[in-house]
Length: 128
Image (cartoon, rainbow, N blue to C red):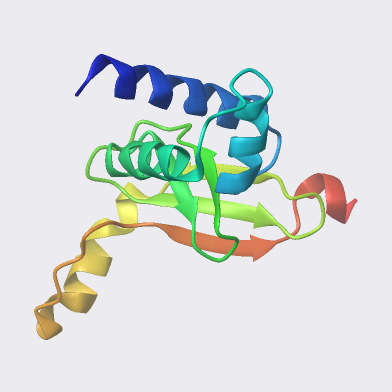
């Protein structure tokens, strides 16, 4: 990886970590434009794609937004609990259910590329 790409990914990961809620690519772009007005959307999209490929960030498909990975789950299953009220995302390690999921899809000979489970609901702070 080029040094510039690694630096860009680190900057974007810092932006994601500083946010309490998931961020879209354009929200990340806006944050970076404060210090670097010439940054273009493809630069941010490439860095976000690399971060998700590396498992350092997660793309929330349902929200079209990103969060930093907060767990160490090699060959595991990130389970992301998304609060529909405040937007917080809590990450859990679902490795214990991986064997069951593998058995479930085995008859179809499906080969998953990545594993993520999104659960929408309400966090304890918003339910109280």
